[in-house]
Length: 152
Picture (cartoon, rainbow, N blue to C red):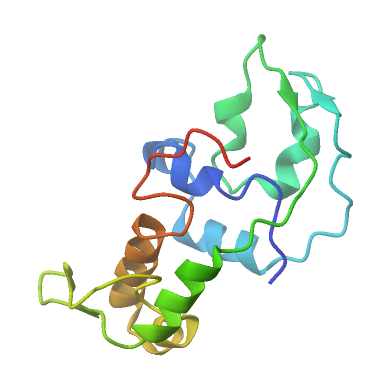
């Protein structure tokens, strides 16, 4: 599945925006499955209120409206690779398969690294898979939890 520009907004923007815009889970699933046939804006491009529609292919249903305001100014940044730190990768391999979800979906038996592998998430039931993805996000390599001042 190709990753889209600004996909992290799914996590960052309030969940209510999706529902308030009248978007459904089926709309989101269709958006995820679609193949984007247009090139993203190049780095340095400034997106203002008159150009916001140009980002529609990269924003989930219901989120485009969050950016529809007169003062909008988004500068498109160059893409970059942010590989996990080697120590994080080593910890993920060392402790692979040990973490598990408790009955209440809390994280159990976690030591370090990425709690759940892609294979574990793919094999899990939908609800459990969602919690696994959330725990992986909390224990991601770029710091701890949701505190990220910069990724540079």
